[in-house]
Length: 406
Image (cartoon, rainbow, N blue to C red; front, side, top):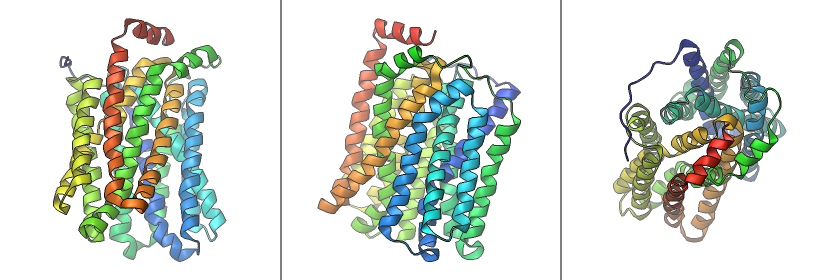
């Protein structure tokens, strides 16, 4: 059943300023997610280390991000957002500075760990803050937030691809460092909402949240979605090059089309679709489109058709992650941070596992076989979404969620 169109509401000035800070924070997280891969070739030139050691940088950065995903929720529910977000932003700034000056591999590893801790906190905190600030329009707000992540993820690869020869890596890293100070200034200056659980963390209610089946269904839905996004974003350029002889620049343009389609999709969702569609309907429609897109990519007989499939996949992926967070944020609004902690922990595990598995499959039988993994992932999202819809129809379940939020 579709929603009736609601009149657009203007947020108070204080809420708008806090939303600007969340946008700035997730923009920096986008830089965090893209920067290590983008600067790696230049780091190889500056410091001698092996590809295996480079892999360790990614592994420990993601491990640190996973650890922070577990920690951030109870921290912001108990102590609030302001100091936590400011500290995480400062850790990212320090990490970028270390990448700029690091003369040794051990210092690079330190920078990667700080990047994971700070980036994980910015990701979780910015999403949870956005959910809390927009109780009547979580889906629209979280989809709009995702657009700023996309801008951040595109920025450093774009600068390196166009200006590395003119500016050099250090200047580009200085630009990233300066940009990361912008949300830091927001976090220090603005007045944030008081901590939800300032009188003490409610272990009993937290246990109910963590044990609730809806939370785990949302988490595993995003396990597959995060795995899909990491796999397509990480492997599509190589796939196009190996199977269709796309030159690196053409493959990069297709990858840019993937991210661009995702950003356009989130803009359309945030401005139009969430106002007339239920969250579950939006996710289901998006997953079906993504399933069609990933199937085209995996089975395409030509590079042009594969590129079309990549763009369709980006459009399909656009709404799934933020809209699923909106469902969880609405259901567990009194402990948003704790709920998002569990979800991000599960999602990040999927983001680490799926591209690794795709690489193993590719080694055994080629990348075309590896791209069956996102197809299966989209099918699993549809299945889990149907379980969420079924759970939502249960009167006893609605009562349980209501109890958690009291």
